[in-house]
Length: 223
Image (tube, rainbow, N blue to C red; front, side, top):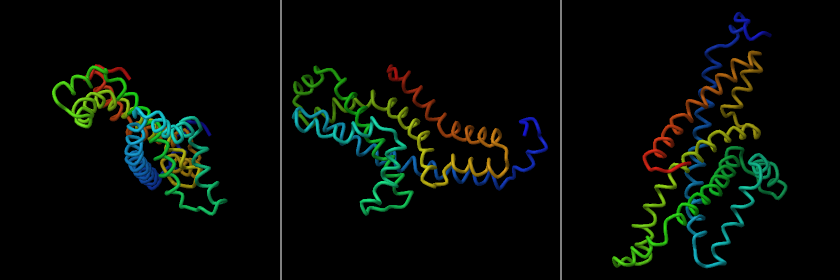
């Protein structure tokens, strides 16, 4: 079928567009929930990584390294298809949220750790000089400067995770990518349908990309 066979586009109906928009809502739901949990877990792991205790600061690596250095799709299959062999079964939605949350936490922890250690050592000394204890220096001096470095990088990570959330379609969740596949098979209009799916992904990620670029310029930090 030719891309320019416009008569064939009559197969594409408004109900197909509704399906795509509903699936986009599921994609956003999965992404936002997993990013929220991933950020909290990653924040904890990143802070522990900054500990001066040489044993304690290595513990997060037991979680971070396997997650950062293996494909997300393999992690998803391990959770959804692998764990049932151990007697642990969970719905596809739960498996997707768990996998994406842990994957996000591993990368976010790296950002937290690198942002904190990037703050000059002299800032600690300045905090102690004005009478702050260690916790106060961490909260009022180090954290504020680390956040300036962290936020633009975190937004870039969030954009990436939103895009990779399309992999949940492999565990039968009807996200945006899966909906596009269903509609494309139904209408036999793959070029049109996947162009629409790409446009919806663009609409979801572009505002975040603009925010990241604005913060990059505002904070004088290059991503």
